[in-house]
Length: 331
Image (tube, rainbow, N blue to C red):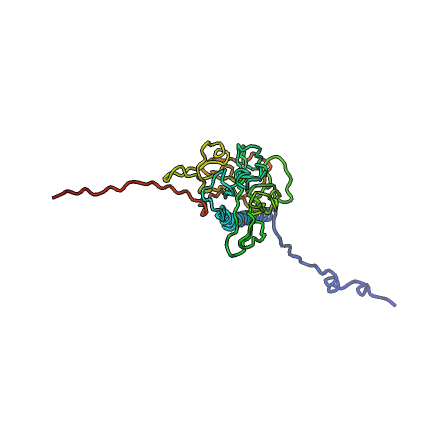
C-alpha cells in the first residue's frame, strides 16, 4: 500500500495548537519607589514614636504631680492636726525646754521629773548634740519633732500610729516625727529612698515610759527628701521670731514657744522619663541642694511649708497703766 507523504506531515492547524504562547504581564515597584516608601514609613514611625514618648512623659508627670499633691494635702494635713494637739491637757500654757510635760519635747524634763530619755529621741536639728538625722540634701540633716499631749476630752483620739487614746486618759501621749530609710531600702551613698515616719508612745505623770517611742514607727509620707522645723518664739507681745531647735536650746533666757513651722521636700514614687531633674529648693527661707548623684532616678519634687499655731500654748503679757483722769476746773 502506498502511503502518501502528505499524510505523514502535521497539518498547519496542529502545529499552531501545539505552540500555545502565554503572554504574562509583569507588574511591581521599582527600586526607587521601594526606597521612597521605606523612607516615608520610617518618618511616619518616628513621628508616632515621638508622639508616644511625649504622651508617656506627660502621663508620668501628671501621675507624679498627683502623688506629691496627695501627700501634701492628706499627709501634711494629718501632721498639722496632730501638732496642734501639742500641750493639750497641760495646765502650763507657756512652753519652753523646762516646762513640765511641755507640748514641744526638747529635754527629758519636758517628759517628767524622773525621765531619762536620750536627747536623740527628742526635738532636734542640725547642731543638736548627738543628732544624726538622714537627708537627701547636701550638708543639711533632716530635723526631728517630738510632741506630747493628754486626751482630756470625752471622746477617744488616735495617735499617729493609729493606736486608740481613751477619753480622759491618765497617760501622756508622745509622738516623734522623723525621716528614716523607707521600708525595704538599704543605706548607701547618693540619693536614698527616704520616708517621713512617726513613732508614738506613752509616759506617766512622773515621766516613766510605759510605751516606748524609739522604734521605726509608721510611715506617714512614703517619699521625702528633707524635713525641717522652726520654733516660733514670742520675744514680746508684738515680736515673733523663728529659731532652729539647736539655736533655741543655746539661749540663756528661753522665750515661750507658740508656733511651729514645718518645711518638707516631697518627691513622687513614680520616676520621670526625662534627663532633667530639679536640684535646688527653698525650705523655710534657706536654699538647699540635692545630693550629687549621677546615677539617681529622676523624680518629681516640690517643697512645702506650713505654719502651725499651737492652740494649747499661750503667752500673756499684761501691761498695767494708771488711768489718766480728766482735769477739772473749779468755777
